[in-house]
Amino acid sequence: MPSVLIELGFISNSKELNYMEKETGRTQLAESILKAFSEYKLRFDERNSSNQQQPVVAEEPKIIQADSLIDVSALKGKWYGIQIMAIKNKLDANDPYFKGQSPVCFLIENGMYKYFLGLTQDYNEFLKRTVKLSQFLRIVF
Image 1 (spheres, rainbow, N blue to C red):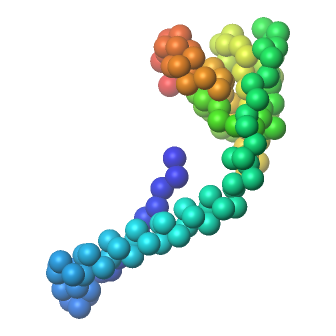
Image 2 (image 1 turned 120 degrees about the vertical axis):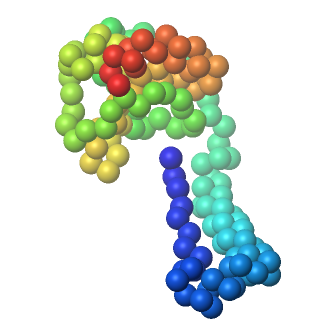
């Protein structure tokens, strides 16, 4: 989950503390944060608009072998799944850690293999799969 830490001033500095305690100071700080975020979001959307203009076409369902390990690095669009681990090593599909779950999907990001279960583009289907995987997740975590 992305996050941001914003340092607005130091309460140990009496001038900054006085500024932050006043309504005008808090309003100016809040407006500055809103403006910065809005500008960032606008630039982000402009850079990524070419990805959003192309409609996502659902692929035909594929038959997946029970012992499959699927590289999903090239998938486009919005996907839902449960990340079960991120490690530096690629595991085999029949690794005991997966406890027979299938299919196991992975992608490589920043040198890490991220493994997922229940991958789907349908949010409601994802919720159903999450319920089914809840017993497995209790065992893992």
